[in-house]
Amino acid sequence: MANSKYRISVVVAELGERESAESNMEHFVDAFDGIYPDAGAVMAANYRLETLDATFTLEAANAREASDMGGDMFCEAANKTGIEPTEILEIQATLIAPARHEQLTGELSFV
Image 1: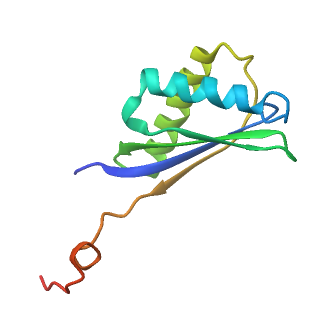
Image 2: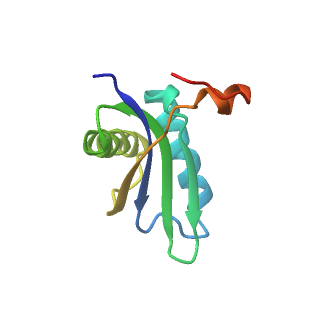
C-alpha cells in the first residue's frame, strides 16, 4: 500500500509570548529546514494563548502513523533549537487528498 501525504500541526505551550515568539519561530523553522528540508515547515504564534503552531508535511501509511512520525519530527527539531522544552498541547494529522483529474485540467474523466 502506498503512503499518503499528511499535513501535521503541532501546538506547543508557552513559546508564543509576544516578546519571544518571533525568535522562537525562526529557530524552529531553521531547525526543521536543517533536518527535514522537504517538510516545508511553517510556524505561527497565538499571542493570546502564548502558543506556537508548527505545520509541516510528511508521508505515512495512515493518520496514526503520521501523528506519531510528526510528533517525533517535531521533537527532533525542537531539541535542535536549544529552546527549553515545553508541553505539546495538540498533534493533528490531516490527509492531503491527491488532486483529481478535473481539478488539474478542468475536464471530467471517467474510469
